[in-house]
Amino acid sequence: MRQVLYVGTTLLASAVVVSAAVNKTERQRIEDAAAVLHEIHKAPDKDIPEDLWEKASCVAVIPSVKKAAFIVGGEYGKGIISCRHGAGWSAPSFMLLEKGSFGFQIGGESVDLVLLIMNERGVNHLLQDKVALGGEASVAAGPVGRDTRAMTDAQLKSEILSYSRSQGLFAGIDLTGGVLKPDRNDNKDLYGRDVDPRDVLHGKGVTVPREAAVFMEALKRTAPPKQTTQR
Image (cartoon, rainbow, N blue to C red; front, side, top):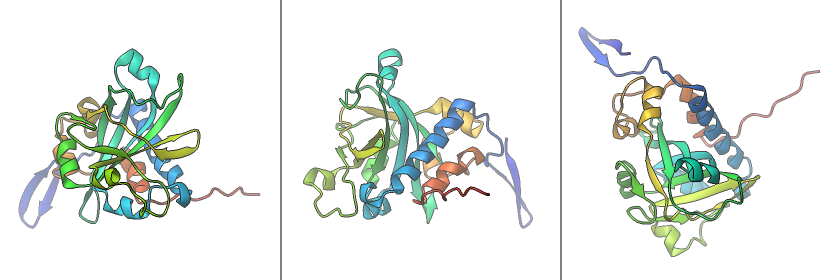
């Protein structure tokens, strides 16, 4: 659906999404991705370093990545990504992570993944139809904590820094061998039409759907307020 905007005496038709056919699974994925960011930001000593977060061009979160998904369906997981746009963040785009053998699962255990895309070259690779991690795009396990002075040469030069969270533990992880690509079908549900992931992440012709507001809030790097019990 298109929304009509009036600017002065000129009538403009914009591609602003005013409704979306997001299903329950897609909505849950957005909420889970937001929860992952909130959880890791609760403990500064185990968080993504602040300066790396501020330098990152894009942030992708892939919650509940399961080994079983690879065995059965050829996919490791589905997630969501947003890139810096002006003083804030772009509307999000759904992503797929597939193939590879990362060696971080035991049985049916699932992990949450967070990827920082650190520079323009990494962003350009990311916006291809698919990108091979460790091949077309260099990737390294990211450092954790407040201080980045001990970063290795590989981490300093990598286009993508990757992190995992499993059973409350957060650490860097090497995703070499994986493949990232846009999830165009789920993007169509989110925006109500076919959209080019490049346009979404560059802020061209789309705005943030209301279903994605919780993820956009989590990108502000704030922990959720503590709930209080009324007596």
